[in-house]
Amino acid sequence: MELKELVAIVTGGGKGIGKTIAEKFYGEGARVAIWDIDLSSAENLAISLDPSGDRTMAVKVDITNEGEVANGTSEVLKKFKRIDILVNNAGISRHRPIEEMSLEIFESVLKVNLTGTFLCCRAVTPIMKKQGGGKIINIASLGGRTGRPGVGINYAASKAGVIGLTQTLARELGPSGIYVNAIAPGPILTEQTKQYPAEVFATWNVGRAIQKDGLPEDVADAAIFLGSARSDWVTGVTLDVNGGILIR
Image (cartoon, rainbow, N blue to C red; front, side):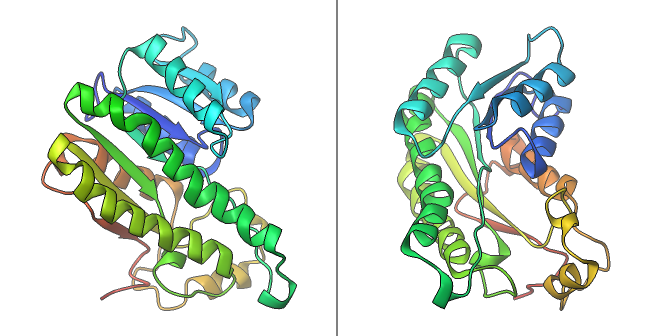
């Protein structure tokens, strides 16, 4: 019960990696607020984890919308009275070759992956400061570390921005007892990535040292570490969870 009684927000928590993080956090004793633009997926997960609703809640939040982020934050405080952990997991990918990438497609990915992360961090900062601390976990990507096949320049740029935001915010908020770290997953088998042919997924894993496919649970376990007291001497770090694709 690494996260017992802690209150965690997981953005994009209704499906994929975010869903697994929410499930694992709940299993570690946390009270979990599941934010998703798709309210039904968030509600289904919240109910399946805790039919009583005592330790879970679902909130419809478009993280690119300041008003919805503010409302979601208020709803969590209203129910759980505090916010100890924020996991900025929500993100999108819209890959195109640069010649075919419109300004709208480029900026739409940055707006969700980077600006949305900023808005959520800003919303919880005064709350965590008042409490005397907290933990922010930003989901970056191997694609933000190095160019990878099929990533897309908009996605890579957004995730590199998340890493820079993480490092700078860790210095800014550290004196207030707020830890800010990131996780950079490599290729992860989710319902979305399983739709790609096996040979495509294999190209993403070129150079992998450990011959085990990455799973959402691998990312969730890293998030548990960064959200728990076990990481109380760790901030400003981007934790690579990629089976050794990137070793440096």
